[in-house]
Image 1 (cartoon, rainbow, N blue to C red):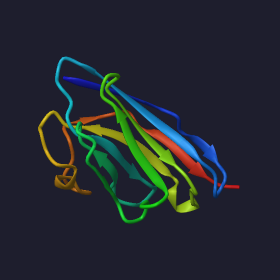
Image 2: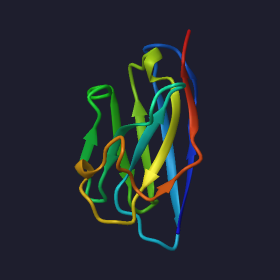
Image 3: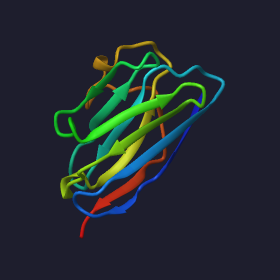
Length: 125
């Protein structure tokens, strides 16, 4: 079983930056890790995923603005969010998978088997 604990959400102005962190713990090995988000009245969407080998995937909506990275020694994944927009406002959820899959395996409707509790990101002036 895997426990995921997120941190780093908050209020940020449009054009600003924010970094989210997610630390994994537990007895199960974690392979792919990443982030989903859900805005009010919208379906949950995949933001970015990264494999343990450093292969990554980004949703088109965040390419060039967000960067996903991970520290395998700390079992932690990060999401550096730059040039944020009001439409980035959402609850961001950390996701991890014990299965060994390419980051391109995941989608809005296909996710890993462990979730964090979510952290709110609000982009507003």
